[in-house]
Length: 98
Ligand SMILES: [Zn+2]
Image 1: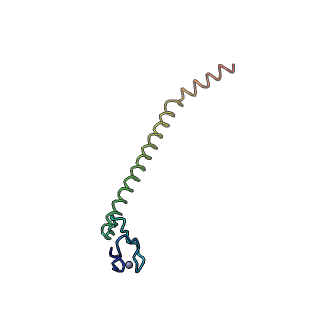
Image 2: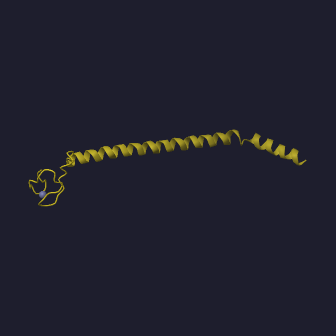
């Protein structure tokens, strides 16, 4: 197992380089290949895109919710608290008091 840092050929089964002490990961063959700056940029871009997409989606959902709530409250005001409502309410109060 050759050390990536100093190039020393270490005996099989060693986890740490005998010369510089760098981990060799001889037990783990799936050594992470370092990403190139271009790959990193691409990854960051895709992550950013996904994040902004979900963010936009949540903002849109919030706006829709707000519109729906405003519509519901407007409908309630429009159909519940009309002049007739106040009239009937005052009539009912008048009949109960007298
Ligand atoms: Zn080494």
